[in-house]
Length: 634
Image 1 (tube, rainbow, N blue to C red):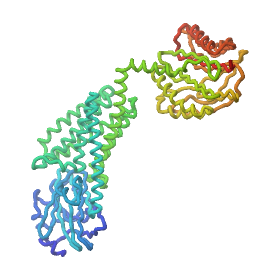
Image 2: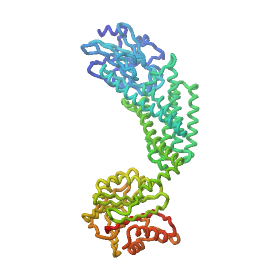
Image 3: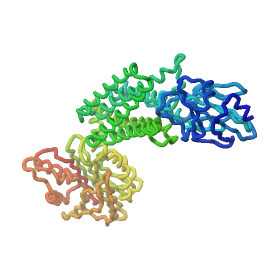
């Protein structure tokens, strides 16, 4: 059987045989091949069979001929040890696009199969991009197969033999992986087109074209280019490959300049990059002057420089820009493609030790690049949308914010559980950041006062979110410290550099319980009818996004009479516009002592009136809020 299968083969030197079984798979079997590089570029099988003395052993586990420009012929002898006929798959995995031509003898006749044609084989999924050749062997049969590789790139391939079941499972996984890759890429392609059309910013147009060229480039690195057929020749694919590399570089640099706003930040880098873009544009015309292989090598050499330029510019921008996250994502994007492309190129050139990961490094690197760039664009789109909304709807937002502010103030009420109540609020601007809430349950009262840092819309929005979060306290009114901590956690993602001080008061008159929790606020005052002031406070930091508040709850006996007073720092920090003098704590205490026997609303009205007189203005530097509750039942 063995001799019969080698009819017509010269006998001086046979390819090193490899014994295979249907239960096993054999990876990286390059050392079982012998190679021959004919002097004649278009040498056919008949000539190869006659030149047996020129076969040399391949010492590597992979097929690697990075400097050879002519086609390379290889041969390997397979011996099948099994009880039944079995179809194996000779799998060639490479990070570049090569054309494979396999010759084997079947029933005494030579059969030739080219890469791309075998995709319609019965046992191979139709959408698989994998270059693999089915080889059927009978029990104890020995067969020598010949493989011709033609490439305009450095010749490189991992080579393995899989049994049928393993290969079908493997190819399905590959199909799913690459279908997901191109599916996600297509979605991002459509998304970028939508952004380019709707927002009309140049950077989105550049990203649209950049992403399109990346997807086209990866049809080469993944092998999907073999499914695209136009006319009777595939030569156009070899010419399109380096042109795609150069065009990808052009749009990548244009996108980089726009996204990082290099013209304003680094004008010299902007000029240099524009000059390099011009060089890349001119380089495309070298396709008419250079031999194709040299043109491809030139494109591969030039493409690394734009990646390095993008990394350098994003690094410089990182130290200067306030939008750190966007720049970091941009840096990660081009770092990913640089690593992926480097692994691919160095492996193909024989500089790096070959690993199977090299076959996926470029598509994986570009996938990570698109992912990180997409995240950066999402952040940038968010910024643009905010900017547009601020310009177009500023008046509307102010009106909404004013309505929100009015909703934060307690509803008009004169009593809480039969206890007289007083309240006054005087904002520093049209929209303030102070907020008061009164929660009344059967025989229980919760008083809440907070002061959000800053003024205007941001402070009002945070105050509004605080009001929503106060629903937490409504469920556990007798545990103000626990509620304070839960509210802090619920607000962390919304503070955006703001902080707020707050005071929680829990009253249960039937049991004479006064319980407080303080988050960096001024103390609760008790003003008795004789004018004596007692302060109630506890430890706790203001609510912020960086440091825990560590709020400690305290419980006191509830006084039998007098007035409880909550206020914000706008009261004691009111400033005389003529001499800059502050109203101060001492003056405030003296004022309310003189009002010790008055009802709560009169106390609040008088304090605000005195502050306006002191300031010589109805507007102050900070919001003024005061809440008073008489604990003398009427």
